[in-house]
Image (tube, rainbow, N blue to C red; front, side):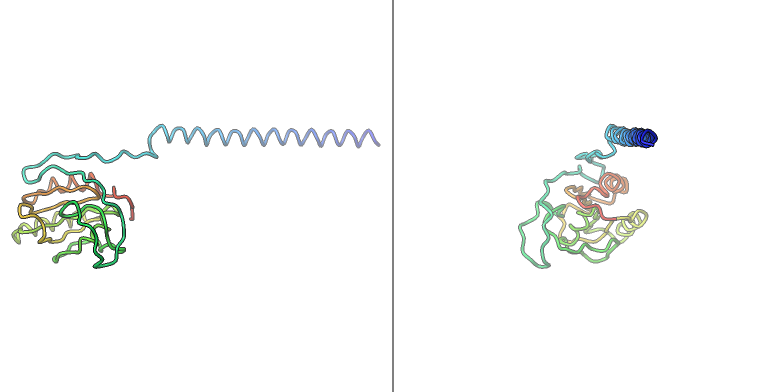
Length: 199
């Protein structure tokens, strides 16, 4: 009886060792697959998307070069709260309201402190001044065809030589007229590249 009991205990112990070994092999295999998959993802660069280039497009006939400006930060302010001057006109970063503007096409000027919040969310802002009604219609049609994360609005405060200004977070391109290719190129290069991506 004692021998039978001892043999049963040895069999139980042996079965536990086999089960433990099987568990360790399975767990080790799973860990190995996860590590290998992680290495493949890292090697492919999927976790490190390329930084946008400073100027993916050169000047067009109507537009100057794309300018990369230093970020002026992402501080939120209250409406009408004073703040330091922006480093560009129109601004591309800096002090802004808590609430972004609704995406869309506007026929009245919009508040720069609100539009900056849209840039922070990866939006593209197209502002214009001193365009003929026909040019405004062409610009409106361009934006309407590809309106995701875009705002179009007049801006009488633009510099006199600027008829169209394209802005993204820390990027600006100014144009002496409507240039669909420049707008498409700018939009494709910088849309959804703000510091806070909000769908």
